[in-house]
Image 1: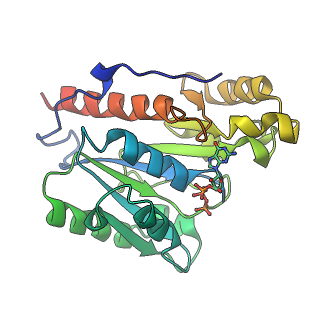
Image 2 (image 1 turned 135 degrees about the vertical axis):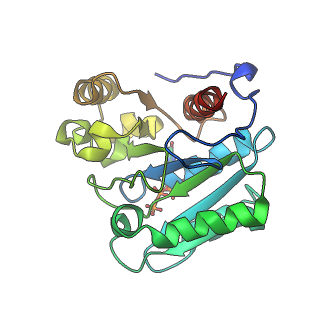
Length: 229
Ligand SMILES: Nc1nc2c(ncn2[C@@H]2O[C@H](COP(=O)(O)OP(=O)(O)OP(=O)(O)O)[C@@H](O)[C@H]2O)c(=O)[nH]1
């Protein structure tokens, strides 16, 4: 299943300006987590390309020992360099997004000071396992990515990312025939594990592969704008 929404109304939204319920103000913060190689950096890059003309975006990447993901985004010039920043976690990646979030909070605050008018901050976790989740003190919503080549039994294995993330992305649908993965079983198992929470299937090798994720992000921004008014 490939969803290709191109409804311009979804990106034609008013940027948030008022305080957020619960006290936090500023840009919408979305965390992206998931196993190594699932396509987190590719998703961040595609979201930036898709939304950068309508929204003011910045990115924080988390790597264990390097700045590799930030450097990949800089090389691809998905955003101006001052909008991309890296946190070196130096430990298990989930620690920096869940337990001691201070380095990430500082990175977001620095970006807000530097850019000023941000609508959206994307925070990419280092690649981890199925247990990684973000602290609600750091993000508003979490996207969890898995990929078809990682095994079509992953949705059945569960874990907090698969079962509770605000959006589950099953990426690399193009690889299904090559690795013998059953896409409809993956989607069925994911939906069974998640109840009413959304699931999308993506192929980022397709020109419009990011659309279902971009639509979801725009809806979250529209929700925030509505809550503020
Ligand atoms: N075939 C295929 N390859 C993809 C797709 N999405 C991403 N990739 C490739 O998968 C590889 C890993 O993608 P990344 O975006 O670096 O994955 P990641 O989750 O950020 O990886 P870490 O940061 O190391 O955890 C890259 O070579 C991408 O080009 C897809 O939909 N289909």
